[in-house]
Amino acid sequence: MSGPGGELLGPAGTAGAPEPLRPGPLDRASVVGPSPSGVSPSTGLPSAPPAGAGLRRAVVLMSASSLLVPVAGVLTQPVLARALGAAGRGEMTAAIVPAVLAGSVATLGLPDALTYLTAKDPRVTRHALAWSVALSTVLGALCLVLAWAVLPLLSAGDAALGRLMLLAMVLTVPVLFVGAARGAAMGQQMWGAVATESLATAGLRVLLLVGLWLSGDLTPTVAVVVTFTVPLVAGVVYWPLVRRRGSGASRPAGRVLVPLVAYGGRTWFGSVASMLVAKTDQVLMTPLSSVRDLGLYSVATAVTDVPVLFALAVSNALHGVNSRSSNPPQLARATRVTLLLGLVVSVAIGATAPWWIAPLFGAEFQDAVVPTLLLCVAAVLYIPGPMAGAGLASSGRPGLRSSVYACTFAVNVTAFVLLVPHAGVVGACWASIISAAVQTGLMVLAASRVLGLAVHHFVVPKSADVTLLWREGRRSARLVLARVPGLGRDGSRW
Image (cartoon, rainbow, N blue to C red):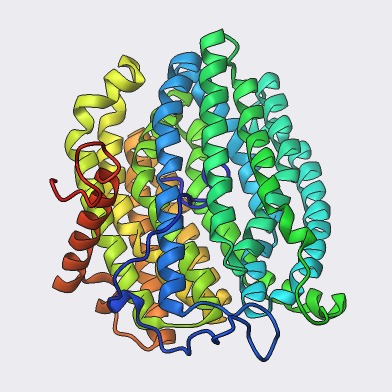
């Protein structure tokens, strides 16, 4: 599974305007509501909404638009598979993955740090963004030089693949700026802007790839260029962050840099380890197995990323909202509900995959069915991990979350190296299952201790969670069907 920072660069999702939902246990928060004027008397800035309302809005936006990434994948993966073939699809993945890994290194954990710091004090946004851009530029350039030095090893001596990898590395550097702006936007609770970026990224990618395929111009090189340039275009939605000035004096830049780097440094090696867990399998697949197995694995990953990306979207919302006002019981319930929904989606994908993978992706991808079934299991095991990790990060303990990611990376690499040479793509899937179980187990145990909640509060759904999921599902369906002519304004005929 691709996990964070997957091949489709950009947020794990967001879109659409939220509809006010009925208050429930998920909405309760132990914080004081906003002042009648809507302005915080202590800072002179707009006050945050009640934590429950803020989380509801964030989750609705993030989860709704998170569906755009897998939908875009469903639309573009068959196009890429048919236009490039299994080998060409593998070359594209082999070129993108090192660039994504380098981008994870070059971020220095700054997007998470920006989310945390701007949620605590929006006045630091412009200074923090300026420092983030400067640091990302320097680190991106260093990663580019390092990648050039090890290019013969990464490309296995293939000169054409090496040039494609280098191109992807160059295009990665400006994408780092969009990631920093996204982190600041989440801290400022600008969920609508994040949603718009996701919508624009998914829409532009589909339009460009499909159009290029129909015109016969889609090659691995063109696909790599589209993958990295589309997020830059969509990132213009964060321009207001640069122009926005908060009320009151901003912090001196020197006082911004220290907490920015301190928090980012504690979360950085965890972000790198998390990215390595998500992408090392795709880096090592070719030398340990074959390009064809990498192509099959890429398709299986794209299909099973639906519940994974949804979980990441909700965890991003939890990080942003709980950084501003902590509410552990709310976070635990959000984790259980997301796990329950992910289980339902994974069962549906696994039960139907044998009937639609080959017709959708092409006959040569029929062998991707078994990997898809295995990665559905890995997806369910994975879901509670990033949710619990969001609780650790928003509680000021990003270092603990990073330690879990580092342990998971070690387990993942060990399992992958031992299994893939003998079992190929199936061995890679079992390595994903093992690493997902380890990550979730360690992350939930850590969150349980830090947040003061028993482990079962994170991973054992309750009857009330089922009721909540069913009620909100019916309500969402009625809202959609109400727009269909002849069903009535409230969708009551449904």
